[in-house]
Length: 485
Image 1 (tube, helix red, strand yellow):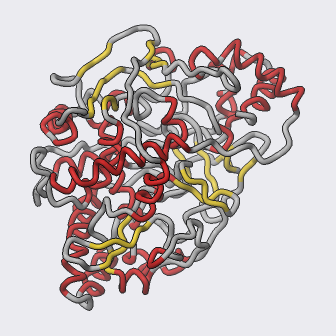
Image 2 (spheres, one colour):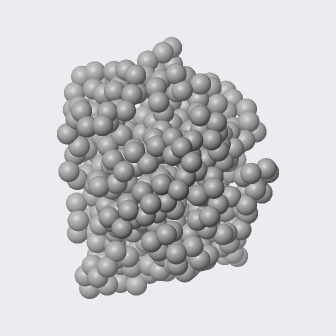
């Protein structure tokens, strides 16, 4: 992170509703820590992977998880050392951005930006290590919502030689213990950075990071390989970050339902960025049963404005008649079907799904790795389709679809309103509570990194046109009901 702050000190200013201090490739420090959880998007249609073929939607089977302690899970999430390499504390304190103390943590973590934990490196040096909250929390109306996917990150700029030089110069002034404590993070993020450039701001590159990190790790030992052992896919397929509070309803992880078996093994894979060998992974895993329990305890934020109750009641009837088969019902007795919907039915951009079947080496790596071992292994099950997600708190989770290509719920319900090129303000974002989504401007073409270009592979905004058959009044009522979920 300190590389970019040296290069772009203006990014340390606090802005409404965004990760004010973080920009571009310093986000590699944090998102790389979350990379393996997206292994689903880099696997293949090859044994030993399980595959499902069906022309019709199918329900996911039960996938019971072990219990944990939610309070302990929260403590581990915001204090834990699941990453053991980081920025030497002295350097971090000189360069860290100033922002509200959202987490109200104690000790050395007091006042530290919420996406870093102060921990001990293996050699005892104190470091600021990235944590899960960079991707899985977002400042919204000056409050931090844990579990809300960060849709304001910027991975659209390459790391410059100037920043690398700044890193080398700065680290030259750090004592040897500090350099040793930072070495793994620096080495691994530098290996990842050349591959981590997106076409626009606001999308997530966890899938790409997964490919890079797996290519540089021995599957059996997790030892780092200086040269990649597999060919790294050329394409960067973007995703949006799903809300954590939805996980308690789901029987499969990720947009494709690809992640099955033991969820904590996927969740704890942040450890892969800095881990030295699998003995560290063994130590970290038990804590992530508690982390999963904490994620299951999260509730969606309530819509903060007034709702037209009469209109919402009409929208509820429309929802239950038109949408509930895939997305479930809500309120007392509500049920969620965990339905996988084939791409030929939902017709949304299929690049993410197809990547599950494209990269043979990566699924083979997974099944040779620690993640697929033990008495409760993680598993990969491929299907050419997407899970119709639960809609709890859907009003807060713009932009929409699995790649964040649709800026508002209004446009999701009426495909004619979806802009081909659109731009939002990342430094001072504002939310539109009526049409539900970030305020944006339609553009004639991609003008800069803030412009979302839906003509690119993986960035398409087509499909999910089920709302088109409704009248304008019916869509208005349905939108009002979605505010209540």
